[in-house]
Every structure is written in C-alpha cells, then in structure tokens.
Length: 181
Image (tube, rainbow, N blue to C red; front, side, top):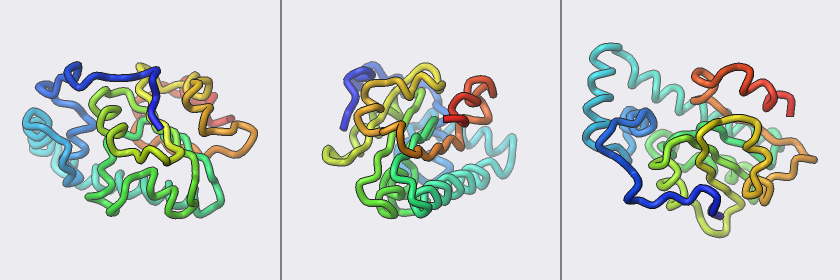
C-alpha cells in the first residue's frame, strides 16, 4: 500500500549529503548507503569506536521488539522513526515482515522523516500487504490522524508502538501522547 500524501520523486533525493539512516544501513551491513554515508559512518566510527557495533545491537533489539509484539498477539504496529529496512543484514527479513511472520496479515504503519528512507521502503513493500509508509517532517501523535494510516490501523484495538531510533532524539512531550494511546 502506498501513500499519496507523501509522494517523493527520486530526483528530489540528495544522496550527496550523509544521512544518519543510511549510515545505520552501512553499519548493519546493508546495501542502501552511498559514498558520503559510508565516509561519514567511518569517520564517526573512528571518532567513537563501537558505534557500528551499537548500531547492529540496536537493530537486533528493534527486531526482537517487533517479534515480541507480534508474538504477544498485537496485530497492528506503529513503527515510528524506523529508518532503513536494514533487517535483511541483521535478521534476513524486513521489519514489517518480522511482524507478519508472527502474525500473518498484521497491519504496520512505518513513519520516517527522510525522503530516501521513504522511497526505499515504498519500493520494498508488497502491494497486497497491509503496510503503509509515511514520510513526515515530525514524528508526533498527528500520525495517528493520517488517512493512510487509518486505512490499516483500527484505533479501537491495541496498537503496538515501536520507536527505537526516534525516542532519543524526539522531545518527550511529543512522544508522551503516543504512549497513552
């Protein structure tokens, strides 16, 4: 499923500037990074040894959370600030596929703030999957009001919330309303 509200043309993407999501992809042995991302990632690793190992551990944790949510019977997941789908290098499957392996047909809404992430995720989601990818300037509670998100999420039922990459950089007052939903 795609979202018309955040359509991004490939020519609008600037891959000459490093992107933290693509740097994470590089650190987790993904294939979606570009030379500026790899150069920046190597510089960060040189300045802060262990960053790549921490990125791999964070990706592993993220997918364990997704497996846990689906295994606990959650059939809807809001994956906020998910970044690149670097799971194949970590787990062999994509994040939304982790959820659907545990709970076939589960609904997943992935929300990112980077156009290149959005474009790649849109290309990877199967047309028949109940998965929506959104690209937003902010990762706040207004995501739940998005018409595309509402096509797959039923807010009268429990929704699992996974936000491993964004809670460290998102103001607490922005995330708090989501935690109560």
